[in-house]
Amino acid sequence: MSSVNSEKEEVEVASMGYRISHQINLVLITLLAITGSMLLFPGLMSWLSYAVGAPLAAFLGSPYPTSVGEELARTSHRFLADVWGVFLIVYAIYLLVFRRIRVFDALRKPLGDQIREARALADHYILGKPLPDDVASSLERHNILVAYMTVVLVVGIVLLSASGVLMVYSTYLGLTEGSYRLLLLLHDLGFYLVLLFIFAHLFAVLHPSNRPLLVAMFSYGRIPLEWARRHMPRYLRHVKGGGS
Amino acid sequence: MVAVNFPPADQGFAVLVDIDKCIGCRACQLACKDWNGLAPVKTTFSPTFTNPQSFTAQDWKVVFYYEGAAKKGLATPAGEVVFEQVDVAPLPAQCLHCAAAPCARACPSGAISVTPEGAVVINKDQCIGCGFCENACPYDVPRRGSDGKYYKCTFCVDRIQNGREPACVEVCPTGVFTFGPASQIVQMAQSEAAKGRTVYGLNLNPYVGGQVRWIYVSSDRKAFAIKQHFPSDAVVPTNEAREVLQEIVPPLALVGAVALTAVGFASWRRARIEEQKSQQKQKEQ
Image (tube, rainbow over all chains, first blue to last red; front, side):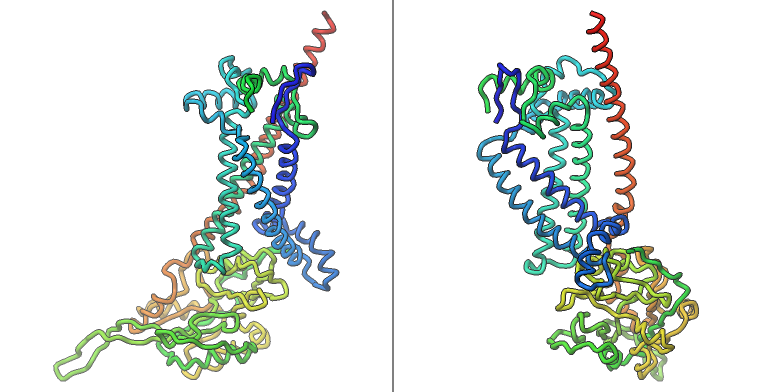
């Protein structure tokens, strides 16, 4: 997936497949979050329900554009979730089979080191303090905060997908009303966890320290070698050593 | 567009249901079907007389039958002998029209409205069949119909608005139901409670607005029916937790977004200043 190009002084951090997957995720999760929010926060999102429902309501001759918008959100939420589910399963199989998962590498460090790295990174990103040399020299492809937030994301997605599938097929599975109620709460909690990840992710990628990564993800997937030496030295040693 | 306005609990109308007077004739159940044009539902065997066994999209009023031990007194020449005996108590049930109906709060399409009379009504043309009302109801009332939409008792609001009592109230041969202004009915229920009778429908969980508009009273003899039928706490804990989160998360997300934007902006500004300084140094060299 990643390779060092010494002539151009660049290193690849996001392959074509990785970038395509990211764009698909980006589009689907945005659409799912919007349609889900229309159902979860109907009061806040009724303007959007009205906006998307009005044309269809006019076509159907319905005097209730907000209801039509909600109906549209509900049906498209289920359809988009199915598409996303299939995509995630395929992508997860690819990552596992080809051992492409590097995001949890930082979790292999001792807990004390993890906490020290997390504190140093928080100080760096929020207060602008420089990273201590020992922390900077041990940074992986994804730092410990990314690893923690990915754990949050995975828990959120598992909650969302498991509860979502069970709710859609609750009648066929003969689930009780109590089970359905619990699933709905878990679905909400899953969404809030994913929302937490999205906030942290957006903050990190829009931070000036990480600009090369943002550019790489939305262009040709490469970052300057010099930047990689400072931000992911351990990973760079791994790549230069011939690892995948 | 999806906001719900609940009339105060002491305004609009209410019904006092005295189950001591109920003989279980099911005239109310039939009158409900008749007035609302609800189709018959195939009956099934069950351990009790209750039929259908619960509410359906075509059965908005059902008489439930409960068995329980009741204390009875027998006058004998030697004095009154009090003993326990198994008794059957019919309990006519329908939507209780909560003062702050959780189903109406949960409905994302604004299909459930509350009329000035206090009736909690589903507009089927607006219903999208999501089932959030069923999920929110602590009394397990709204039911999905074959068309995917939800149905329940309307409090016969069409009759009330035309000066008539609900169909079930009007038809009852033994006067189980007392229909009237909510303030008056609540007063009657309070005086029944003061007499030591069991009352259900007042001082409930804030989840349902603390009160419902169909208030049940009974003597000790038939109180077991009320205890068996209604939940001890009128709340759906999972939905209550969802409502709390729905209140908390949007402002928290807004504050978080503003804070992260401010930090991010400060970082960009700092980076820009450092960049300018280094450019100036290069020029000077």
